[in-house]
Amino acid sequence: MREFKITYFFDEEHYIRRFIHTDSLESAEQLVKSERDQYISFRDSRGIYHELHTGKVRVVQVSEYFREDKKKKLTERD
Image (cartoon, rainbow, N blue to C red; front, side, top):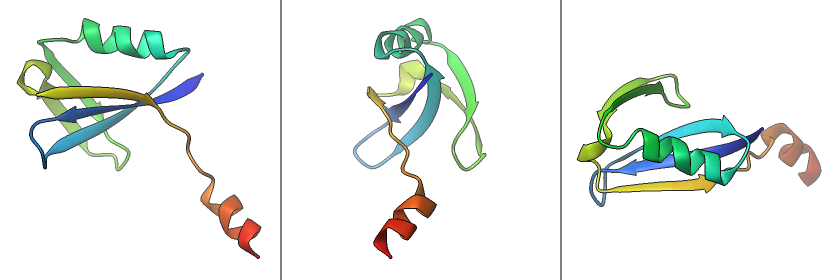
């Protein structure tokens, strides 16, 4: 499974990010398309619950996300 970041932009300053796990970018895009113009709910990376209507966002951005292991990064510096 790969991790993808979906960002819902409401305007230039306000957005919500959602992370999903799926097999491909195409399946992530299909999920976004299937949720178009309806209410969705999810918890963000901080555990905060969100409900939003996807028809109310201006831009939806989907990209693959590569998490960095912070512990590994700190030990590499030493």
